[in-house]
Amino acid sequence: MVDVAIYLAAGCSGCELSLLDLGDRLADLNFRVIWASPTLGDGKYGRIPEVDIAFVEGGVRLDEQERIVRELRRKSDVLVAFGICAACGGVPGLANLHSKDEILEGVFRKGTTTDNPESIIPQKTVFVDGKYELTLPEFYENVRAVDQIVEVDCYIGGCPPTPGQIEDAVSRIIGGEVGWITTARAVCESCPYELGDGMEGAGRFTKIVSGECFLKKGILCFGPATQGDCGASCPKVNTPCRGCGGPLPAVSDYGAKIVDMLSLLLDEKGVEELGSNYHTIAKLIYLYSMASATIPGRVRKYHVREIE
Image (cartoon, rainbow, N blue to C red):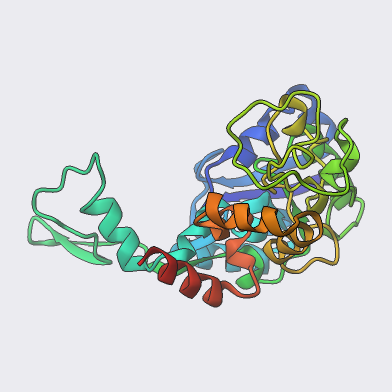
């Protein structure tokens, strides 16, 4: 029996719920969860046990999350970045295109549903009723992928990974496999629609394209550059791939790979349409991988200049 810990950092708990979707098949995985927090259990941080495998869902945004991830690394034989947020930063990583002050201002003062008449921004330490000191976790300037904090042994992509993908990945991890746990097949290899040699422009996804390749019809789909362990589940229901599976092996910067892909498929007219139809394309091509981009600072400067 393999002892497992499961921790939710800066994620949404979707990966954990996908694990629970295995249902009765969980009993076949030959592991027992002896520590989980906060979604699946009430594990006390001071009592993290030694485990064989630690699964971390979500990136790292708070000092508390960093402390727990480091503790799990120290107490586990194998540490798994579980899902695309842990592996590459995920959608929360898009916050790296904005400063910490911009985010706090937008959420606590300028939000359309914000009710904050005293215009209070959360502070790390506050006194409640003038006598009780309350300390909140520090909110870092950027979201980081787990391997930007500690060494990671295994990666599982997906937002969330499918139950079948998790079942296969857990078996392979227990069997000693390391690195990205993937079939290494692109989404296009599981997609029923045939990719052509080029794109008919670069339009937005505003119409149903039933029974045809999105790229052929001039709609951005990232299937050629994305791990297809999902079985092309989005294209099969007429939704373009947006890259939650993560980069294919040997690709270090997913967004750069998408740019490379588009440069091969678009003609001059298509490039012009890309610029006119997508004013913040950095948020699209790095939708799930901004935190792990090799050029995050440059992307951020470009984006800020663009919205000024």
